[in-house]
Image (cartoon, rainbow, N blue to C red; front, side):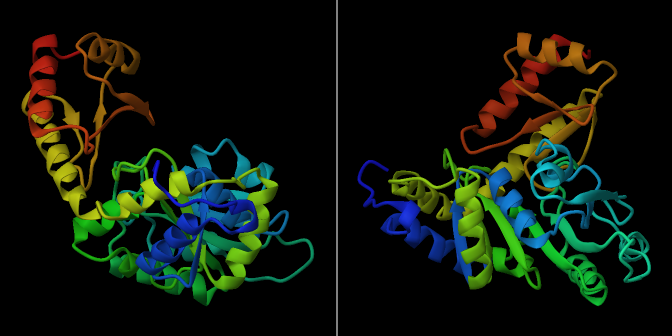
Length: 318
């Protein structure tokens, strides 16, 4: 980062950010990409470009754009959100549920217009759940048939790709836009991208500036993101740690999901008491949707996982 070649990214002359955007676009299978300071900004930019004020958009229940972005999709992008049930599996609806939510395409001035589908792969609140490629294709076909555009929140798309043994671009096929985050397990301290057509990125750059996302010598941050892209292959190690943590928690009687990637969710009787107990034992976790969320990441070793399990077992079941 200290040695990065830099320029003024506000006027698009930072060579390291340019290199990152070109590489990220290629990895994600999109014509162009734009660096952003955060994934939340990347999603907001995409929704702001896709939606007109009052347009309805659909997203799986618990999606980040619905629950973790402080209403910006409605407040700033002007969209009317509606959640889709996870009836195809964690984090994803069936095409039938999507079709029913879209409803009849009646074009009258007093009808609510549904214009956008937002998917999330992996789905954070569903425990890092993956949308398999064939289900992704079915949902895309359903949306396209109804005339919807599609944005993919791919903050953790690297995890889905690593778990499936596929390149990230295999999981973006058919979408109009995709966001991706370089700090989700890859080690970068800051940075995301939003990618799409060249025309989309031109509009996205203006929106980023409106939101305060223009930076000057941003290459110092983009340099870390370039390193992060070299680490996608390491993520399966985090998935293995998560599987071991989940198995160990199940062995001592905890109600735990079977992780698909690096997120472990646990149902407990008293969330606040459990979190205080864990912190007292030196095991750090956070709440998510009424459950305890553990994240396995590159700064943990398998020995750390075993140590955490020992501490949790010694502390007793909350």
